[in-house]
Image 1 (cartoon, rainbow, N blue to C red):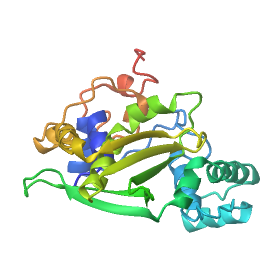
Image 2: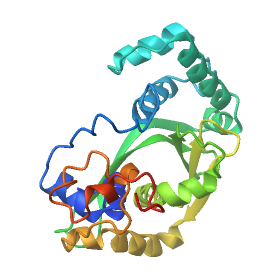
Image 3: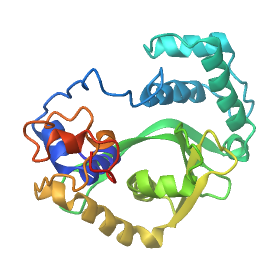
Image 4: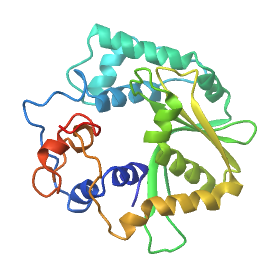
Length: 268
């Protein structure tokens, strides 16, 4: 099976995809003198915790979790250390912003909502091809009959334009979600990427059933290299892309001074 995340990984570096997804080599720890890539809690763990809090939110009567609820969600997700008062307040504030947003109100008015909705649809008409699989944060059917997909994003924007971030980092996800809804019979689907820092400005695009063939062709182009087993090395390596890669420093054709540089725009 293929997923939007695996297709995204392949697009970033085909050779790392080969090492991790095909050879199934384990990730390697970063050198001890390397600067951390995130703060005290990793971005991934922060996202897991925020998703857990939002999964329990009643869209029609949203109640903001207190510090106790935040700690309980972290414990249930197996995250350590437990959130301190400052982090708990920050997470609760993000949930509060979403609860007060127009997007949350739309979900509260929807005729049907499903959370963590899993999907699978054929990559192509060829039965020998893999399935495309994944899960949607929130799938809603509105009174108009339109489907609404909401994807929470816990990214720290740091002044970046949300639309540009979606285009750069989540374009494949948007494509896959649109096709999942259209394959399920939707006449139209709106994909809304909601950055929790700016919940009143979701990045939304609507797709119609008439676009399905064009969307399927885009997906085929993204996955063609995987199916043809072409696993090229990324042309511009840097630490943010290569950290933890099992091919780094041995199997990879790039030297360590390139894969550990801070930016693809610098020599070292």
